[in-house]
Amino acid sequence: MKKIVCDSYEDVCRYAADVYALQLKDKPDSVLGLATGSTPVGLYDELARRYSNGELDFSKAQSFNLDEYYPIDPSHPQSYDYFMRENLFNKINIAKFQIPKGDAKDPVAECVRYDALIDKAGGIDLMLLGIGLNGHIGFNEPAVSYPVGTYLVSLTESSIVANSRFFGPDEHQPTTALTMGIGHIFRSKKILLLISGAAKADITSKLFEGIIHTDIPACMLLLHPNVTVIIDKAANGE
Ligand code: F6R
Image 1 (spheres, rainbow, N blue to C red):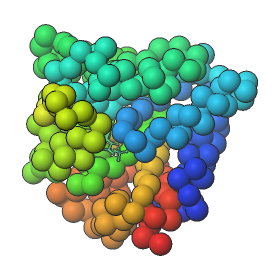
Image 2: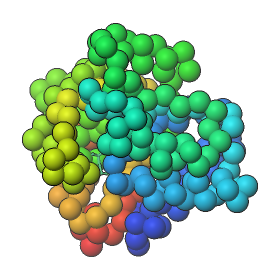
Image 3: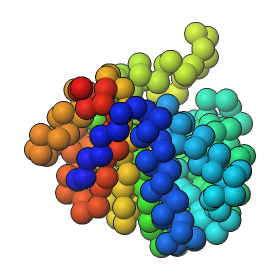
Image 4: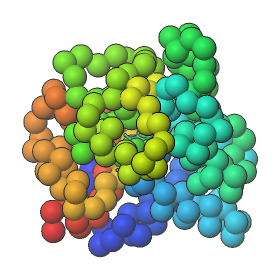
């Protein structure tokens, strides 16, 4: 696992955008795995800026998001579908994007459908991850076992509290979600993990102990051959 420490969050986003530029240059029809949350917002801004300057072209690329609340209507402002359109897809020329359907009638069938789509695309070339305060990746929450395929997960108290900042006081916050399992994350050819802010310093230091703590899902990344962690000084405990 390679660690790149940047001075600031803005530098993290620029560095990560450079990785995307190289990826799209090498393979214009890349399959991109994408995340939501606050961490990738600056990267998405930078990708949109470079696209509008003519520096990036997503016209042959496609993407798969890691997760989506369930149940939630895709038009709901707190849905990850809405988030992705607002923060990225409405601003670039990506050929195709897929997000688990938060309004699917049958969540299990939706998970099977989503996995089949990823397989049909040939798997993910570049997977973008953030990390939860509890070490979750996607919504793979700390557990004793981790499904390989996409699945319906009950969110932990830690994740519900951490994400409550996005919801208004009277707004219903889902406590379950559909998430890509560990399998498709691990079959990704390259993984980019972005970490920012002092609040993530504890979980980051656990990750870099070089020990597979089985109750920290992100520790499984230590087993993947091509993971780059781009981190700001605050998250690095500096
Ligand atoms: C979201 C996701 C989550 C977030 C994580 C960090 O699609 O997969 O694992 O990456 O919860 O969220 P932020 O960036 O808001 O701290």
